[in-house]
Image 1 (spheres, rainbow, N blue to C red):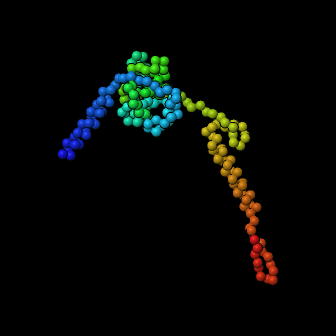
Image 2: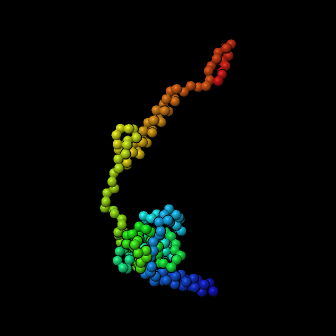
Image 3: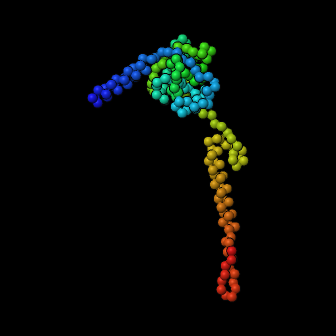
Length: 188
């Protein structure tokens, strides 16, 4: 009896997986600007400049390649929200702009799972990160942002050491020895 129950559960899971895999093309829309800053179903905060999407059944964190069937434009998105309407996928504003569907509002798309061996088209690994100069914490000109933290910590340590040295140097006990009648007494 248990074997049949397990077999039925596996059959249901298999049919759900096949339904998701068979659902390759469908209608796509995009999030309105009013959703910017709100929490998604996964707990993440929606940001209109991120490449994310909402899907009915795929697990959160699933990477998808979304291709506009009319223009051929493609984008890689990550599932981080749920969808309850008649569309197959809701794209973030940035992903919809990349596909070129902002003016149309909706479009037919083809969705395929993203293979990790493929390169993400919007990620630019080859570009160097620009170095930013900020005012030196010791007011000696400017330094790189990457150096600022170590210089600030060094200055903070020097300041606390000087403060500690002055506190020790000026430390006085709260007791004075008073000699009366050859018996020492102490007062505070």
